[in-house]
Amino acid sequence: MNIQMIVHSQTGNTLNVASALLAAIEPINPDIKLTHVEASNEREMDPNKLSIGNLPDCSNADILVLGGPVRGANASPAILKTIATLEPLQGKKCVVFTTEFFPFDWMGGRRAVTMMEQALIARGATVATHAIIHWKRRDRTKQIDQFITAFKALI
Image (cartoon, rainbow, N blue to C red; front, top):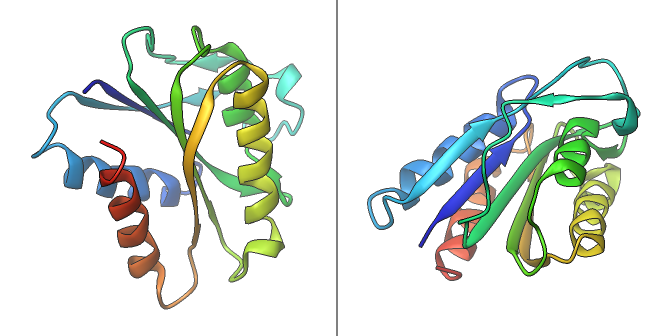
């Protein structure tokens, strides 16, 4: 199964989650790739004013995994721009995740994954599952493990 992970990470937290997923999945499915995208301006909050470098070809992907940090209680503008730019998304199965500093979903994580899901659905993709990883919570490792377990159930 061809799996393409695309993440935007400013502090490294989102990239750490993606790397953990890669490490867990690669032994059972070696056809998995991870791309860390970068925005033209990391301070910009309007996705329409960004350009994204390093976009992978997703045309052969069976599953797309998209991850980004919470920024100002919203999804990362860079991951939203990535979703708007990727081709093709029609009919693609997607998984989304976000990382946030705060300890509760309602403090930005829920809104961020909803924004990502809505952007994907508007482009014709389906969202199979999502995760919110709270970086400063003591059970962060458990949250990552639960995300990996949920993802394994999809493949």
